[in-house]
Amino acid sequence: MLPTFGYMTYQETLNYLYEQLPMFTRIGAAAYKKDLHNTLELCETLGNPQHQFKSIHIAGTNGKGSTSHMLAAILQESGYKTGLYTSPHIRNFGERIRINGQMIDESFVVEFVDKTKGLYEKIQPSFFELTVAMAFNYFAKEKVDFAVVETGLGGRLDSTNILSPLLSVITNIGYDHMNLLGNTLEEIAWQKAGIIKTNTPVIIGEVLPETYAVFVKEANEKEAPLYFTQSRYVTEFIEPTENLLFCNVKELKSNTVEKLRMDLNGIYQAKNVCTVLCVVENLRKQGYVIPEASLQHALENVKELTGIRGRWDMVHQHPTIIQDVAHNADGIKQVLFQLENNYPKAQIHFVLGFVKDKDVANVLKLFPLTAKYYFTNAHIPRALPYEELQQMAAQNALEGLGFDNVNDAIDKAKELAGIDDVIIICGSFFIIGEIN
Image (cartoon, rainbow, N blue to C red):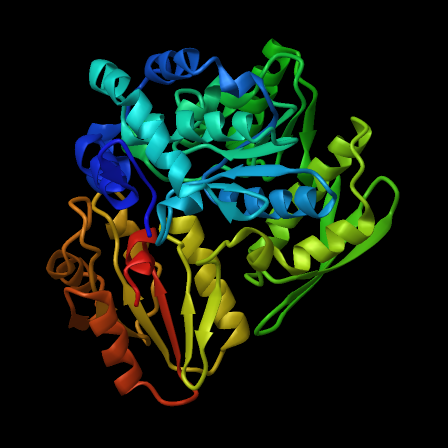
């Protein structure tokens, strides 16, 4: 039985949120609000819940979701009641807002929307602004010890940037959302660097020559202690298996080596875990107790502890089927690298779908001519129709079949694949979300 308050069921409440409020994941840039006014007004009405819990704020082009989930798992395994806010969701709205891995209570969602609906109609927030306020209100009400909060888009003007965190984290900078964040790495870095706060430590996961000065300038202006992960940790050994990533990370100052077993087994997670270790080091310096055994257990069980999905997820064998939410050039490069590493001789089948506002033309140039292709689309206004994707791919000599439904595409790939072949579904969170 779905909880009901006032006149809306939980599903009716979600329908209201999806249909009445501008939603970036559905319609793109038209839903993006370039200031924090609405979020501040919403939260002020709620008693400023963002100031009622400790937080860690995470931005970056890629890896911020994985990093957020790993940190949340470590904190909850260390005995802290831990909130986690991430986006977008893959299947269930509740994936966005969790406490100790449990999705937000449905009755809270219904009550929250019901009691504040008049305010929404007055200030007309976006879907994202609303869900940020909902998450912060939920974390405050439930008295979490920590909240790990992932930015939605950028950082400086992102709705989550009303936090005063214990520390800020920027995983990396790459080309994505250029229509909103800028066309150069420096411009994108400036937007992400907006989460750096006065006298608050900031950890940079991966720095590039183009972005180094941006971070240094922002940190100096805010008098924020600045830590570059690459100068503190280095990965010495990486061995991916079907279920785990074995990873040895050296701490350069002490020359000690951390031997990790990670259930997020994409090779790209080796970079993210170095950032996580840098965060843990900083939290320990601040006096928070994070036992080594808790860290080790958490990293081996992130999927179970936090519910993360879509990161090099192997969901079938013979043929191997992998789902990954990689959707921009840097993410796709990581996927292609791991395919070459893990399956150098296998025939690869790509089930691909993208959204319109990605740099799809340049991303398609990365894909191998030797693979087989199945082009599809999600059923949201922002999706790139599979016919257009098929045409763009053909311009790069990538030929394949077209499908309006990702499940039909997967079925055809399974039909045509040999038992030793690999089928990988990627290009968008939203096609992963529509898989049966």
